[in-house]
Image (cartoon, rainbow, N blue to C red):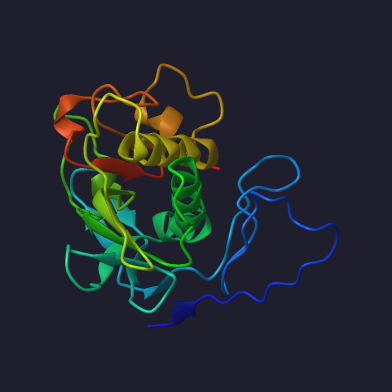
Amino acid sequence: MKAFVLALTLVFCGPLAAANDVIFGRSSGLTTGPDGKVTPLSGTLQFEDAPDVTSKVASERVDMVNVKCGGDVEFSNGGSCTMQQMAKDMAEHVDKYALQCFRAAARAAGLTEPKKIQITASGCFNDRTTAAGAVSNHARGRACDISAVKMDGGKEMQLKKPGSEAGLGREFYDGFRNCWKEVTACAGGGGGGEGATGSIGASGHQPPPANGSHDDHIHLSVPNCSR
């Protein structure tokens, strides 16, 4: 297999960063640029080519990669780091934006922005339909169910339904989903569906869609129309 291990050399020129723009580590960048948009990173995720998989549900071949341990963004099954298999497009998008959006979530909750994260995830490739019988993005390798994130320093945040009151858990949860919507939503995606947000979350939380079947995790995805 040909390895796709991404690396970034950061060269910073120009005006000093604003007070709320925190720069961390070898794969870091400004959380937002001068235009207020989330700045994509590179080299946070380590992955390599894997054999293509044919999805029976989606009736299409999926360009797969194996996400490995050792990057600033890792996946686990709730314990130590484990390899995850997903579509290459999903891995590339996670590489650019996952760390940035968890930094945005930490900032919203008044926490220190992380240098590294480990995401508890499952189902990044799961050849199945949705509850309504449609083709799931899990079947395309373009969705993971994520239930927690551990940040460097040991702080772990549960990505389960937080309370309705304002507080650290709610601000972190909604902050992450709103950031992911900004970097993932389909252009012109309306109606509050997954294509408009790139995630499905717990009932009562922003942005839509949200429902009770996702109270114990966030369905995180990269729809085919994502930028």
